[in-house]
Length: 249
Image 1 (cartoon, helix red, strand yellow):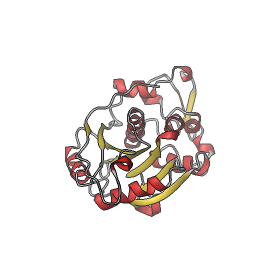
Image 2 (tube, helix red, strand yellow):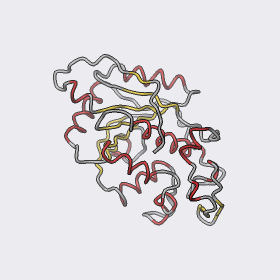
Image 3 (cartoon, helix red, strand yellow):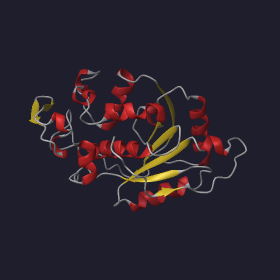
Image 4 (tube, helix red, strand yellow):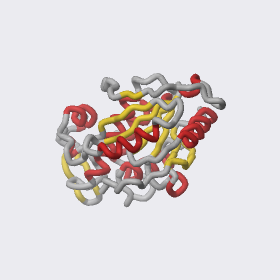
């Protein structure tokens, strides 16, 4: 497993809430995906998280899908054992040569930049979270909208559903409209990271699950994953989004 150290960790004061104690807070850690160029988004979501009593959160420097020739992307994506393997998207095929550019089967070879960056960013956040002492990892996109009331509803829900591996938190379409918010139980996270990696067996053959026209765009792949592979999930739609224009294309 790649050793990713935590950085940019913010831990506001943790007052004792009348309904939830510090012990419960300590079981949840929030990671926010935010590209360096989107400072306005970070200021917005950070301001909201600072109003959530007991919320411990970490900013993750999200990946730009058009610029993945970086050390982090190479560490995450490179799979030496697969070099020379034929990848495909529909009728289009190419050979995986170990570079980030060829690492996304069932997506456009020269396109889908936004979702490619989102995929690597989520995996990066998950790898970072392995070094945090918590039971639940919440990953937010930086256009997520959250407040103290919503945060505590999520914490209570997670505390009552410790048997689940994945919780869909995006409010759109009853949890199926995007990934503005997702929660993962730490117990299952290593397996989830492996399964959702762009070059996993599941990703390479994701067109064989459900609708073959739904490729490996991050949210589509997640829906296939929870419907066909890891069915130990539940929906708790409560995270709004849409304050900023989407950068996914």
